[in-house]
Length: 172
Image 1 (cartoon, rainbow, N blue to C red):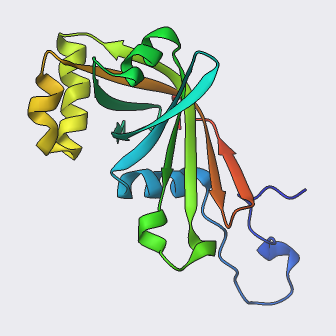
Image 2 (image 1 turned 30 degrees about the horizontal axis):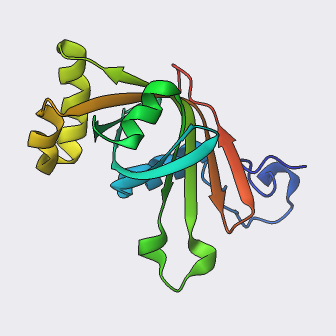
């Protein structure tokens, strides 16, 4: 099976002078989608059941981490405290009404860690607030917690069946 990140054919193999542009790499597709969409569905698990919740998020520049905040008096917080394995789903449905085959989604899987006060908290809160400045009082409230997801892998889906996997690395 051909790698979906490779061009349809190599120009060296073609006798035509027509150039076919290569498909964007999975990382580029993922970056474009997560930078455009402000909200995602956070998927957690507990008590033998999955649970999804809407969150405002921000990714680090290298896409290896994502940060979000949540009130501590919620099921989401309790489930995150019990199990750190999470998935974050970002899609472009609102942008593509009536264009079913153009909907894209990316799922980032990883582990969530609560970030306590101090310089690390300030760094991650700053990233989230740069993207969502209206959340300032919420993020800084004692009744809220800040979480960082360390991303293990991304799955990008286009046209309901074209799936690309990308694993971010420090050199990505």
